[in-house]
Amino acid sequence: MNEHARPMSVSERADELEEHMMHELERIVTKSTLHYLNDGQQQMDMGPAILAKNPGKHFLMGPDPRLPPMPAKPTLVDYFRNRFASTSHLLQSANHALKAGHNEKVILACLLHDIAVVSFIRCDHGYWGAQMIEPYVDEEVAWSIRMHQALRFFPDEAAGYPYPEAYVKLFGDDYKPEPYIVAEYERARNHKWYMTSRLICVNDVYSFDPNAKVNLEDFVDIIGRNFRQPKEGLGLDDSPSAHMWRTMMWPSRFL
Image 1 (tube, rainbow, N blue to C red):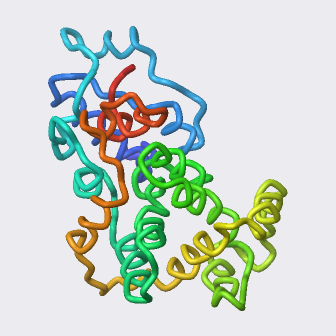
Image 2: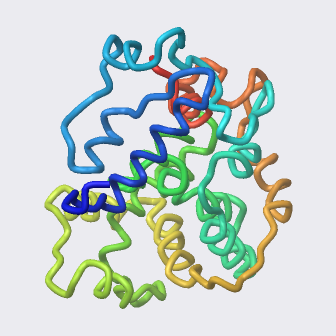
Image 3: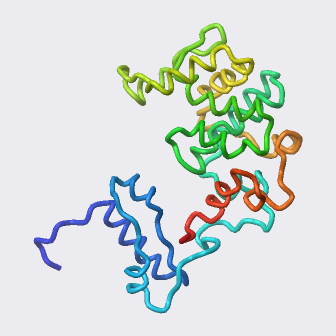
């Protein structure tokens, strides 16, 4: 070893390990451009160059063998179990709503409010989450999840929602929401479903207990009554957001 060689960073070691794992797979797995952007890089994996490095192999165009398999006709519960990175916060939020005696629309909204964060992306997660579920739930549920993106930054003491102290720690005491968030809040505050969305915020901030134990099975019946499961399988139907669920099911497909 060259004693003057620069030690590899943690990121470089992770990339080397990932490269090694790729060579062990029968198919070539690539990263999306968004993945690279998240690492501060403007790049994309180019097909010919990758094929040259992996002679005799083809790109992955189906399930990723590194992930838990999905059934032939996946349900929302299957995504909870096999694709969501974490469900504790969602389950705690829904459990608070259940114990407070809220109706099933509120409980479902709390259960699903951060699904984009745990499965897809953080930025504008309220909008992404609402779009993912819009074809399958009551309009009130989707609207409320979309609008919690903005409402969470504005206190409503009468509804039991002060500005979260955690946000000061996370974003700094000088953070100001972007103008589009302010405009969204102004549109939402007098809406007929305002309180449903506000209750997402109320049940959100108290749902980060690392020791809390809540079982998904406690909400399967509520999901069954309030989430329109497509007969073809979630992601395999022809809804406007089915492609988003397919992306979660097959996140490493080349195209």
